[in-house]
Structures are given as structure tokens and as C-alpha cells.
Image (cartoon, rainbow, N blue to C red; front, side):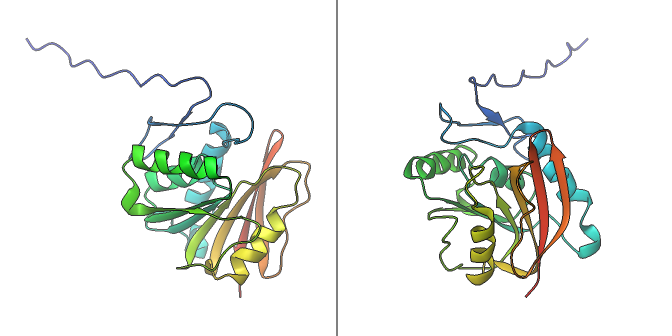
Amino acid sequence: MKKPVKKPSPTKLKPGAVRIITGAWRGRGIEVPPGQLIRPTADRVREALFNRLAHAFTDSGFQLTGARIVDVFAGTGALGLEALSRGAAHCTFIDRNPDAVALLKRNVAKLGAEDRAVVMNADGAHLPRAATVCDLALLDPPYGEGLVTPALQGLGRQGWLKPGALVAAETDAGDPEPAAENFTLVDRRAYGRVAVSFLSYRT
């Protein structure tokens, strides 16, 4: 009689580390630096955000599978890497902090995602010209610094988004709803002290 095969236990993460929730890299950990300089999106907020992306916008033609994404104020890359794990085709990660850029490159390499990712050292509030248009932008700027509106303006002005693209912006729940020309707020959800706003881009 064969002995039952024992499933391997999930890898234990260091304190403060972040785990990919689902998809091809489910359970894989990514590096998070100590301190408060880089604040990754909490697991429950990340899961809720991607559940909305998977189910709430199919009528508009959005599909995460095969999508091209830009992750602005990327930090650890938790949002963009989660998207890649769930089937997105490519992600451009943008952060102006050199330490964050180095961390992003390590996390991308750790998951073997180099062929599906580009890491850029750039300011999310003053975006460079895009090399290609994207289906989705993920924004997770530092709270309380008024960075969402200039990021939205840059995404539109610098050619990052195709018509009908979605933007998911994480803010403090007490902040005003994000707004910019050519963007329409289509959904907003609060999760405790965090809010995620979904906007559609039209030229």
C-alpha cells in the first residue's frame, strides 16, 4: 500500500514579507524592506482589488489575462507581480526611489519574470513617454501627497493608456475621489482606512 504523498508546507515568510495570493506564483514570497518608506498593499486589499478586476468590468471588455499593465509608484511590485501571476502578459514597474528600483529588480528576478517585466526609475507624478499602450494602470502612491491626479494626467498625456483602459488607484479612504480630464470614476470601494477607486480612460 502506497503511503499518502505529503504536500510541502508553504514557505515561511520573514516578518513583513508579502506573499503572492493566487495564480502561477501562488504562495511565493517577495521581498519587503524594513521600515515605512515602502508600503506594500495589504493582502486583503490586493485580493479585493483583483477580484473586482476579474469580475466587475467584463462588460466593458476588460480582461486581466493577456493584459499589458503599468504599475506606478510600484514599491515592492506586489500589485504588478500579482497581476502577472494571474495571467497578465506584461508589466512596466515605475518607481523613483533607487532602493525600490533595486528591490523591484530582485523580486522580478526571484519569480523568473524578466521576460514579462520592465523596471523603470522614474517619477510617477512626472511620467516619461510610454513605449507602448497599456490596458490597466495600478497606482499606489504615498498617501496624503496629492499624487494621484498628476499621475492620471501623465498616464493620459504621455500615451500610457489605450482608450477604455482601466486605472485602479489606492488612496486613504478619507481622501477625495480621484479625478482628471478624460477619466471617469466607475467604481470605488473602501476597505477600512484604504479606498480603491477604478477609473476608465477615454480620449
